[in-house]
Picture (tube, rainbow, N blue to C red):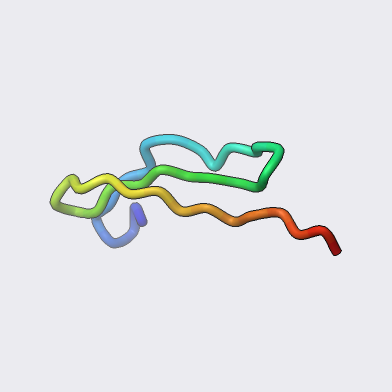
Length: 40
């Protein structure tokens, strides 16, 4: 994200259900990405 003008606002954070990070695009709009754990 940083290489393309965005920002990392938080994380990545490990949670019991998976990992999450909060990012912002170059205009400042925030969004979250999440990768859930599997039961495999």
